[in-house]
Image (cartoon, rainbow, N blue to C red; front, top):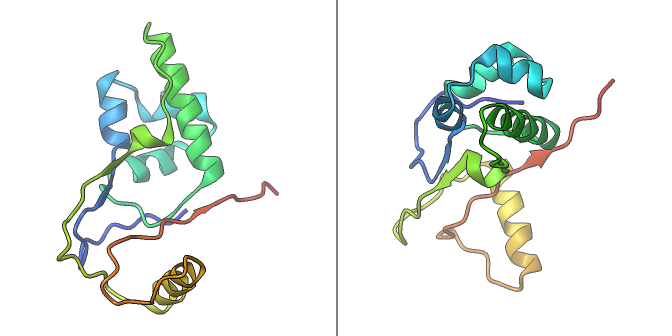
Length: 135
């Protein structure tokens, strides 16, 4: 799990909302850790950033399950989904992503599979969810 703490060259298209979801029901790091199986230190790191570079599918699933359990304990039967943890804001057509070797390869292969011409003016962002195997 990589947490992106720097905010250079980003436009906040996708924001991480764990802090907001936890604050709604006054869920502590320790409680969420016990209910989700995610270490309290990891929760603290995830809670204190607005953007994340990468999160595993297992951690995301465990957070959603733990948050849903915490909400249920407080009398709210809301089921927290990954969509609740992310907030998307469209930046408009003038957005030009910063190219990197990893992003360029991924976006070119994506566009190639879709039958579109490769362009430096694409206005989509690739988000990777990686499933980590327990050892």
